[in-house]
Image (cartoon, rainbow, N blue to C red; front, side, top):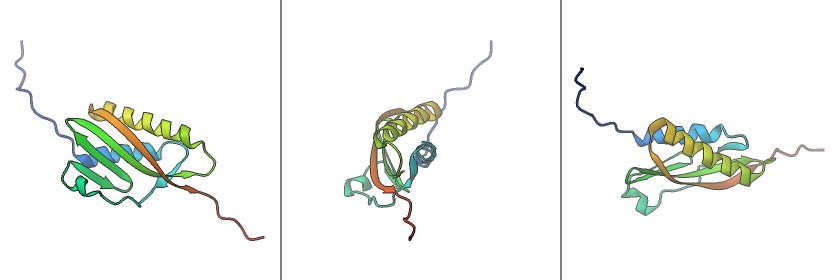
Length: 119
Protein backbone atom coordinates (compact mmCIF):
# COMPACT_ATOMS: atom_id res chain seq x y z
CA UNK A 1 0.00 0.00 0.00
CA UNK A 2 1.45 3.38 -1.01
CA UNK A 3 0.74 6.62 0.71
CA UNK A 4 -0.50 9.31 -1.60
CA UNK A 5 0.64 12.87 -1.02
CA UNK A 6 -1.98 15.25 0.30
CA UNK A 7 -4.23 16.73 -2.36
CA UNK A 8 -2.97 19.99 -3.76
CA UNK A 9 -4.61 22.85 -5.57
CA UNK A 10 -4.55 23.59 -9.28
CA UNK A 11 -5.13 27.10 -10.52
CA UNK A 12 -5.77 28.11 -14.11
CA UNK A 13 -4.74 31.58 -15.24
CA UNK A 14 -7.36 33.53 -17.16
CA UNK A 15 -4.77 33.89 -19.95
CA UNK A 16 -4.93 30.11 -20.44
CA UNK A 17 -8.70 30.29 -20.92
CA UNK A 18 -8.29 33.21 -23.34
CA UNK A 19 -5.77 31.22 -25.38
CA UNK A 20 -8.03 28.16 -25.51
CA UNK A 21 -11.08 30.21 -26.54
CA UNK A 22 -9.10 32.24 -29.07
CA UNK A 23 -7.37 29.36 -30.86
CA UNK A 24 -10.52 27.24 -30.85
CA UNK A 25 -12.60 30.07 -32.32
CA UNK A 26 -10.08 30.81 -35.07
CA UNK A 27 -10.07 27.13 -36.05
CA UNK A 28 -13.80 27.13 -36.80
CA UNK A 29 -14.44 27.38 -40.56
CA UNK A 30 -16.07 30.71 -41.43
CA UNK A 31 -14.30 32.81 -38.80
CA UNK A 32 -12.03 35.39 -40.38
CA UNK A 33 -10.52 37.05 -37.30
CA UNK A 34 -11.33 38.78 -34.03
CA UNK A 35 -12.64 42.32 -33.75
CA UNK A 36 -10.79 44.84 -31.62
CA UNK A 37 -13.79 47.12 -31.10
CA UNK A 38 -14.91 46.04 -27.62
CA UNK A 39 -14.05 48.38 -24.76
CA UNK A 40 -14.15 47.14 -21.15
CA UNK A 41 -17.25 47.94 -19.13
CA UNK A 42 -16.87 49.69 -15.79
CA UNK A 43 -18.30 46.67 -13.94
CA UNK A 44 -15.63 44.45 -15.56
CA UNK A 45 -12.87 46.35 -13.79
CA UNK A 46 -14.04 45.07 -10.41
CA UNK A 47 -14.62 41.41 -11.35
CA UNK A 48 -12.49 38.46 -12.44
CA UNK A 49 -12.83 39.51 -16.05
CA UNK A 50 -10.17 39.88 -18.67
CA UNK A 51 -10.35 41.03 -22.29
CA UNK A 52 -7.75 40.31 -24.94
CA UNK A 53 -8.00 40.54 -28.72
CA UNK A 54 -11.77 40.07 -29.01
CA UNK A 55 -12.08 37.48 -26.24
CA UNK A 56 -13.70 38.42 -22.93
CA UNK A 57 -13.50 35.84 -20.13
CA UNK A 58 -15.46 36.13 -16.89
CA UNK A 59 -15.27 33.59 -14.06
CA UNK A 60 -18.01 33.40 -11.46
CA UNK A 61 -17.97 30.63 -8.85
CA UNK A 62 -15.76 28.33 -10.95
CA UNK A 63 -17.97 28.77 -14.03
CA UNK A 64 -16.52 30.32 -17.18
CA UNK A 65 -18.48 32.86 -19.21
CA UNK A 66 -17.12 33.84 -22.61
CA UNK A 67 -17.86 36.72 -24.98
CA UNK A 68 -16.27 36.49 -28.42
CA UNK A 69 -16.14 39.46 -30.81
CA UNK A 70 -15.59 38.03 -34.29
CA UNK A 71 -15.46 39.02 -37.91
CA UNK A 72 -16.90 36.38 -40.23
CA UNK A 73 -15.99 35.42 -43.77
CA UNK A 74 -18.49 36.61 -46.38
CA UNK A 75 -19.65 33.27 -47.77
CA UNK A 76 -20.85 31.45 -44.63
CA UNK A 77 -24.05 30.81 -42.74
CA UNK A 78 -23.47 33.03 -39.71
CA UNK A 79 -25.91 31.15 -37.49
CA UNK A 80 -24.22 27.80 -38.17
CA UNK A 81 -20.74 29.23 -37.61
CA UNK A 82 -21.82 30.75 -34.28
CA UNK A 83 -23.29 27.44 -33.11
CA UNK A 84 -20.05 25.68 -34.09
CA UNK A 85 -17.98 28.24 -32.17
CA UNK A 86 -20.14 27.81 -29.07
CA UNK A 87 -19.95 24.02 -29.22
CA UNK A 88 -16.20 23.86 -29.89
CA UNK A 89 -15.16 26.47 -27.32
CA UNK A 90 -17.34 24.93 -24.59
CA UNK A 91 -15.92 21.48 -25.33
CA UNK A 92 -12.32 22.73 -25.39
CA UNK A 93 -12.60 24.56 -22.06
CA UNK A 94 -14.36 21.71 -20.28
CA UNK A 95 -12.03 19.01 -21.68
CA UNK A 96 -8.74 20.88 -21.32
CA UNK A 97 -9.16 22.50 -17.89
CA UNK A 98 -12.22 20.74 -16.45
CA UNK A 99 -14.13 23.94 -15.76
CA UNK A 100 -17.86 24.34 -16.25
CA UNK A 101 -18.95 26.71 -19.04
CA UNK A 102 -21.95 28.91 -18.27
CA UNK A 103 -22.49 30.59 -21.62
CA UNK A 104 -20.65 31.63 -24.74
CA UNK A 105 -21.90 34.79 -26.41
CA UNK A 106 -20.86 35.45 -29.99
CA UNK A 107 -20.83 39.05 -31.18
CA UNK A 108 -20.52 39.28 -34.96
CA UNK A 109 -18.90 42.69 -35.43
CA UNK A 110 -18.36 42.64 -39.20
CA UNK A 111 -18.09 40.52 -42.32
CA UNK A 112 -14.99 40.32 -44.51
CA UNK A 113 -15.92 40.90 -48.13
CA UNK A 114 -13.34 40.63 -50.88
CA UNK A 115 -12.28 43.95 -52.33
CA UNK A 116 -13.97 44.78 -55.59
CA UNK A 117 -11.51 44.99 -58.42
CA UNK A 118 -11.69 47.93 -60.76
CA UNK A 119 -13.08 47.10 -64.19
